[in-house]
Image (spheres, rainbow, N blue to C red):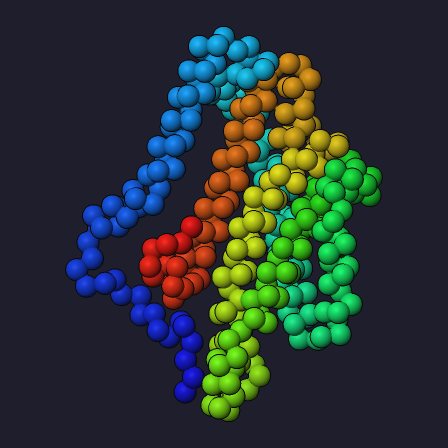
Length: 281
């Protein structure tokens, strides 16, 4: 009977593994980033105070945090609306990308005809696409922003997923054939597990892109209670600490979504060598 990488993973921890081991591994993995983050904040705060930089040029982190606290109800509501747009486009783009990747891998004629179109779509600048999409839907509709997000993330998903499905070790395919495996068994036991790392790499890129594209699309019109419109409104009023507070929230939302995808990846691929060795990003 043929086996998959999933069969080789029994979910048991190495003998003698204790909780402090994982705590130490976590500190070694994320400690440098945390130190660099705290050091950067302190350096930023000190530079602003030392050189007496005006808030409209670069506000100090302490001022930004004060603005975040005072404006939190409005910023959190705007962040929720922007996240809704980003998640809608993310789901649509990933779904379409996976479906098209499966199609182009199955039908070579479709691959030859569709891939140039996908490349051309990816070359369209978002600042040119967003106002056009805004005019295609009602001004307050989030669909235009979702469409922009889906179009931008569609390309990395289809490219990476199709690559993972096709660049399989010939020896593995030959082994499956020698075991008289059906094409469906080859697809589910070899091609899909092999494509998962490629797929999740694309999704992690798409997650951060979704927030960026949603906010940029909001710059060109739409609901006023979104992060993009909030940032523009505060910048036009020269209330830059409030604008920076919204930017901070947008970054935190992107980091949270990235962390969620990373957790799903670890659960979906416990057999992957990167997680067995503890070298995953």
